[in-house]
Length: 282
Image 1 (cartoon, one colour):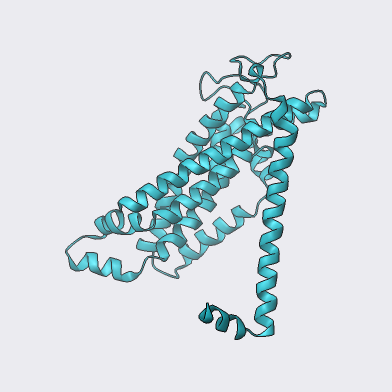
Image 2 (cartoon, helix red, strand yellow; image 1 turned 45 degrees about the horizontal axis):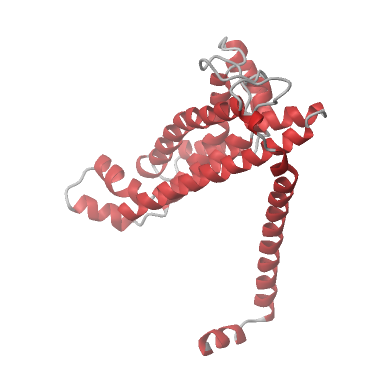
């Protein structure tokens, strides 16, 4: 206790101001999050009923089950497209490309630019390129590729920073034992950087599940259990938007928002558990 007291006594006035500012920002962030969660739970829990989970959507039940299935499919397919591309691009930039080269700077600038583009622009691009030019029409496949482009910079940048945080001594030790470049990357570097990679994947999942603007143009608005990747559909977030915009199903919209919140928390918790298990094993 005396050591802690001395540390606080040595703080300058500017340090105290920064400390108070950080605490205030954290308190505001947590307060806003708690307010949103409590607001959604209070408005929606009471309206959750068995009819919302019927297999087929009708005007009477306002079932969210088809939207839930579509959301899980969208998350799985989008990650299957974006994660390999993002991770392998990051591996190339950190482990194989010449540091500071013009190509590396161009790729990083492109990724940062894509990160700042509004989602509605991605939706227009997906509608023009995937739906019209490639002839896919409004479909799950067009929506998945559009979302993959959106989350690709996020996964790539988080993976790149995670790889760069691994000390060079890991690489030198592996090389000194006779391992080649490829073996060092996949047996030493990647396992050590998995926490950062999973953090990027968790952030990407949150954006995929919560996206609406880009999907309005690419996935359609038909609420049904998809029969194929070329079927139209509606995710949970898009379903909440459609119900709320109609004005007649506000209670069902809040109930669906509760389920959406549970799905997001559940997927994030599952991803965090997998990351923790992987980290302990390695």
